[in-house]
Image 1 (tube, one colour):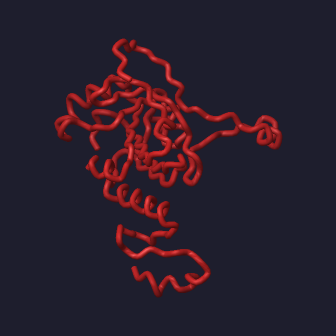
Image 2 (cartoon, rainbow over the protein chains, first blue to last red):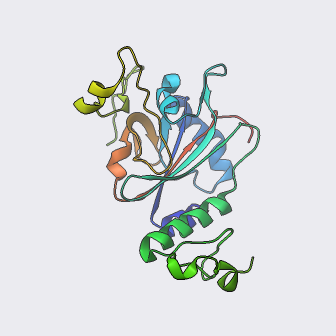
Image 3 (tube, rainbow over the protein chains, first blue to last red):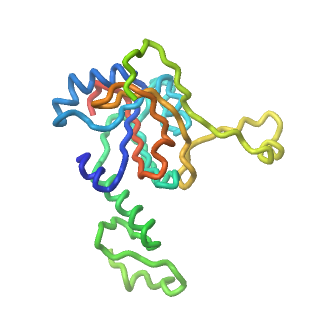
Length: 139
Length: 83
């Protein structure tokens, strides 16, 4: 899966309130048994949840960061955010789809309709398209 | 980047928030707390954190080091949990 992110030129950073030492042992004891060679991306420590707080994902009662995910573009602008309470995992396929869509938009100036996948029809905003989306895009 | 000597406690900068411009403080009400929050469509908030770097060891990571790349920043509740 990480290969897909590399292909798109994406840097993945993971962060929890655990220390860097716990990250290392988790990698050695468990992650390396789930993923061949272990996870390849940096695992950051947010001790005290100060970073999670400014990103709006720190649960003060539990003392942990919930499952927040942010896509940041090359201009350092946050393009997408998702937060889940801890008991449901993320969908990496949807994350990849969103990155591809944002990269396409950035490269072309077109916009992508709901559920867009690469090579599907995009829209070019402008006066001519107003009221005529139905002609070019049929969900 | 590898730090061979790495003690138990190591301070990091955490969130790095640029000081508000003077104009902003001039227009804000006295006693108002200006909280800075990450927001979609706005610039990401920079930070520095200690990190485990697989294959390299330990080191500080600053988010803005990766400026110019696409970045996915993922928070999660904890190591050795279930999901």
